[in-house]
Length: 442
Image (tube, rainbow, N blue to C red; front, side):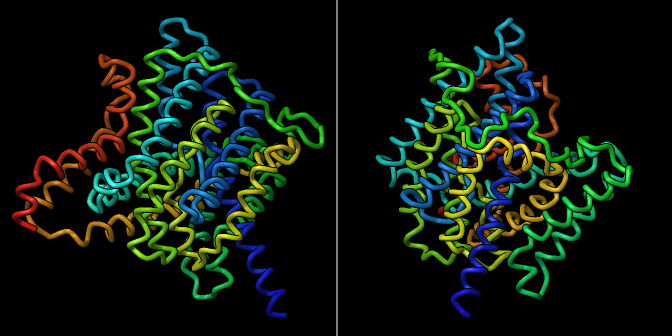
C-alpha cells in the first residue's frame, strides 16, 4: 500500500512538473511565431520543436548537468533578441526567414561559448556571480516580468469577464499554494490548471467568452498540425544557419550574460532542494556547460534558446518536494509529446491566462529568494547604494519607450534595452569598482 501511495505521489508530482514545463514553453513560441508571420501549421511545428528542445534540455541538465529539478524553458533574453533582430532587419528589407537563419547561427555560437566557459572557467564564474549579483538578479527578474503577467491576466483576455476569470485562477492558485492541506499545497499548480482550464471552457460553452480568443481555451483542435500519430520535428526550422560576424558576436555576448541566469537558477533551486552550500558552485558550473548543450539543441531545431528557469525553486518551496525522478519523467514526457502533433495541438489550447496566473503566483517566491541572497550583506551605505543602483537602473529601463535606444547598434541595443541584463552587469561592475569601500564597510 505504501509503495502504491509513493508511486501515486510521484506520478502527481511528475504531472505537475509537466504542466509547469508546458506553461513556461507555450507562450514564447506562439508570440515569436506571430511576429515572424508564421502560418498556423508553421507555428504548430515551431511549438512542437520548442517542446522537444525544452524536454531534451531538461534531461541533459537533470542527468549530466546540475542534476536538479529545474525547468528548462525559452530564455526571456533570447526572446527579446529574436523580436528585436526581426524589427531591425525588417527596416533593411531582410526577410524573416533570413533573420531566423542568422539567429540560428547566433544560438549555436552561444552554445559553444557556454560549453567552453562552463568547462574551463568554473572558479572565475563562481567568483563573478556572487550572492550580491544573484540577489539582484532574483529581485529584478520578477519585476521585469510583472508587466507581462498583468497584460496576460487582464489585458489580453479580451473582456472584463475574462479578466475576472483569470484573476480568480490566480487567487485559487495562491490559496492552493498556501493551503495547510499537503495534498493541495504540494500539487497547487496542477489543481490550478484543472480549475482554470475548466472555468474558461465552461464560460465558452455558455457563450460568455469567445472561443479561441486571447483568453479562451482555443478548443481542442490540432491548430494546423498533421494528424499523423508521430511526427518528430525537423532540424533548422528557418533553414541552414547563416553565420556572419555580427551574429557570432551577438550569440557569444548573449551567452555570457545568460550565465547569470544559470548560476542564479542553480543556486536558488539548490537551496530550496536542500543541497549543501559547498556543492552548489560545482553544480552551477556543470549547469553552465550543459546549458551550452541545450543551446546547441535549440539552435539545431531553430527555436528560442532554453535555459534553467529559477521559477523551479518556487515550485519546490510551495510543493515541498524536490523529487528528481518525477521531474525527469516529466521532462521525458515533454520531449515525447512534442513528437505527437495532435497532442501538442490540444495542449496548445490551454488558455494563456491560466498559465500566466499560475506562473504569477510562483514568481512571487522569487522575491523572497532574492532577499535571502542579499540579507547576508552588511547593511552599510555602500552596500545599500550598490543594491539600489543596480535594481533601480534595471527597473528604470523597463519604463523607457521602445525607440529610446534606436540610435545604438543592434547588438548593443539588444543588451542595453533589457533591464534585467543591465541590472546584472551593473551589479557585477559596481561590486568590483566599489570593492575597497565594500571591504572596508563589510
